Image 1 (cartoon, rainbow, N blue to C red):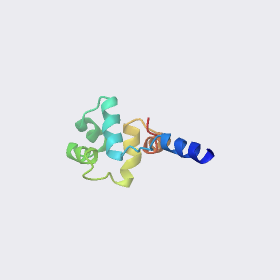
Image 2 (image 1 turned 90 degrees about the vertical axis):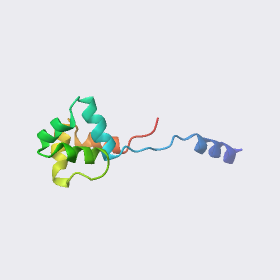
Image 3 (image 1 turned 180 degrees about the horizontal axis):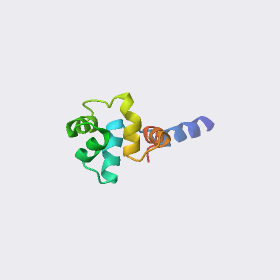
Length: 88
């Protein structure tokens, strides 16, 4: 009986899902009501670069990460939580 109960509980666990960097960039930009052009101007990159980041064709350079977080009003801790959030 105990084995059956444990198996039943394992099946009921919620799957863990993760947001990707492109999803976070796009969702956060839209929440703040910025256009790709506006974010590009704040970061000193082109609108096309923002589009490539949001669509997953390219990744932002590591040295741009702090500026991206500042622009999108996110802390490193918030980003970490978004990348590791639990599914609902």
